[in-house]
Length: 300
Image (tube, rainbow, N blue to C red; front, side):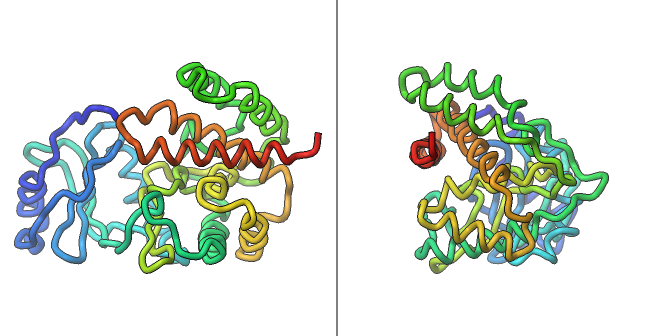
């Protein structure tokens, strides 16, 4: 996990609230999570402060502030649309946000109770999200791009993992995915980082989708890779059908081949960069196993 460039503490959040949003300053503040890019603090019962811990994350937070108010109202699941915008202040150099508190635990720890409900809920969300993006939508050099542009990273992660993975099986699956035709439709809105730690579950159902810092435009296959991260193989067909019914892109086998390739690439990234993050490592291991099992069932 990258080192923090700024120490974000509850005391710092209290000072920023007092200076910029004094009507919230009386609320108790406590740290909820210290993530890869952001520190998240609970503010009272209904709000959360989200503060970047690295400069690169501050630029991503601005994308959330700009686009979640546009996209959020048309999505069928709650997302953390900012309700207050924070500015740099004494002891803190970047923009920050106050967003609604969304109940639940991350799906990486607490999967939904019924995988069929999960397939329907995820598909409905992505079908609503994956509409043509605005001309000035953010561009992410790592997500939504042709799979071939990820090849060097895939090889580098394989080198890191060494004998821990079956390199031959991985490369066969990867080459099949890269051979699929590239996305030739209009760039779609993408979450960009849709994995089980960014999906909340409450009372057995998905209760929200969080962390839109990588929001971007491009190939929807990037987001559809979540099927291999969360869904059992027997629910993939229902997920595809529900996605298309919810407004997602028309049936196209190449789209799902690329989605499997994205799941493979991301699983390797999770495994290669999770020495201090066991939850990420477990997501990577489970996803890699699902992709290779799927690939083994393919003809030829």
